[in-house]
Image (cartoon, rainbow, N blue to C red; front, side, top):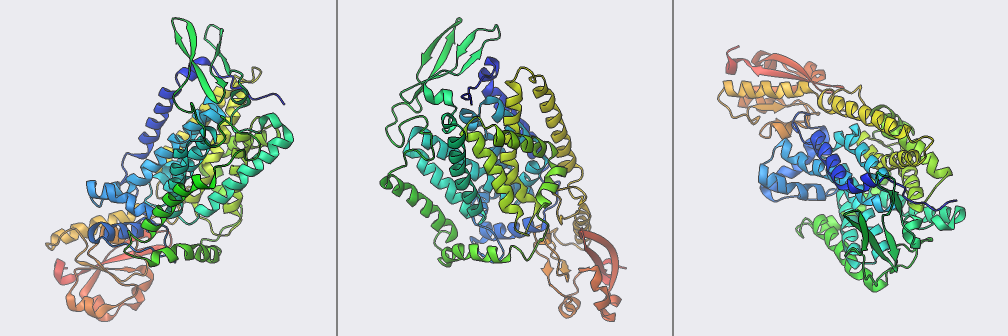
Amino acid sequence: MAAFSLQEPAWLERRFLPIGLGILVLAAALRVPELGLNPFHHDEGINGFFETNLLTKGEYRYDPANYHGPALYYLALIPGILLGLTTEAMRLVPVLAGIGAVALVLPFRRYLGSVAVLVGAALLALSPGMVYVSRYFIHEMPLVAFTLGLLVFALRYRETGRSAYLYTGAASAALMFTTKETAIITIAVLAIAAWLSGVYMTLRSPAGAGWLPAAARSGSSREVRTEAGAPIPQSIWVDGIEYRPATTGGSARPIPPARGAGSTRGSGRPDAGGFGGDRPAIGDLIGPAVVFAAIWVVLFSSFFSNPKGLTDSLASFAFWSSTASQTQVHPVYRYLEWMARGDTAILALGVVGGLLVAFRPRDRMSAFVGLWAAGITAAYSIPQYKTPWITVNMLVPLALLGGILVRELAIRASVRVAAPVLLAVALGASCYQAFNLNYVHYDDETYPYVYVHTTREAVAMIAEIHADEAKVGLAADGSGTAFFSPDYWPMPWYLPKAEYWAQIYEPPILEQKRPMVVIRVDQEAQLSADFKAAYVRRAEYLLRPGVRLVLFLRRDAFGL
């Protein structure tokens, strides 16, 4: 097999940075506007409750039985302090994580080329699922961003041998685990994919067994051409140092970049190739291990106020492995179905790109991405427990595979014209789907990724309660409302001063003469004659699919 050489146009190499920045602007444009449009999901309401206690009382205790890690809440303190406990402020953390995930694809340029990473980043920027989950105050998008951070730092350490990348990689890994316990699945998949990719490429083509393209490892130049057709050596590796051209007045001279020069630790080469290459010495791992442990201990112990959080953090793995098959049960193909309907472009391009790297891999990194995509999809699909937001873990490697496919089309003269056409169709379809899902049908369960979501009818109920509170001289905080329904989340986020009961409990409500009462529609038969005499049925609202709530107003309070 021919050695992989990045035969990419000179104009793309020169404009990589502005194009990358443009993609990030596009990612922000889809994620940031109207963050309060979509009402809080049930899970967001619970996360908001934890955040409220942390910000107002300084209280947070990790609970492995039902909830994920503490990193999200401590990160959300910053926008919470600066902007207040608002829906928009809470969702800023996942929004920034979503934009950061797109940005962290760009450093893979050194391993996959400009075309592949720009296409992959653009697909993620416009992905309906990535945008939707980025606008949720839940743990999944920070987990994805920290995963990409770990990969980037690990690759940079392996290439340069700089110990700083061990520290940043350790911090990324610690933040993964303190964000969500499923980080262990991601770590296992990445480790297996890294090993298998080396084995696979060594068996197929020893020249392609390194992480960097063969041209970058061997000392040959990556050749591109000017718009006039003249060849320009884009970079040359000599003794582990990359020399790039500086073009002035039509001439080019190689200059050594500052980064990577003079590295003497780790492999000492731009890429060690093979299965593993030289590994860091045990002494080099002590500092990063301390960083990892410090982040773990500080966050899980709630800054040393809850020592039990450390043992609970380990118990969480056993708990989630035993309960994963008891709730949210779906067939093995459900994630593929959600992505086929919700992220058609990424799944289609990713599958074809995956088949390409499986049968004709050019380099180890492409093989690794393919194994990553297949492994993470299988790891999450085999258990019965499934929720749509987990798909973002699969969309990232699938988008990179889509970029590899477009790259392969672009460097083949016979099919080169298909690359921009295919890319335009894919990005156009994704953009349409992303806007439609996130700004029009955000609470419509017939759309993929919308899952037991709070409806806009619930927002109308909140508005009605606030209006009724104003009529009786109460603050717009739910202080005049009691909920009897066992289903009420995320109402405590919007109505923090309301009373919440899991069942009908009339005596104190009748004695206190609460102006408003909310019950679930199937509880109406349990209401006493005294309650019906004191309250009048105002309206019925859909909280989320399968849960309808009824609002009652006290007759004497509203003159009814």
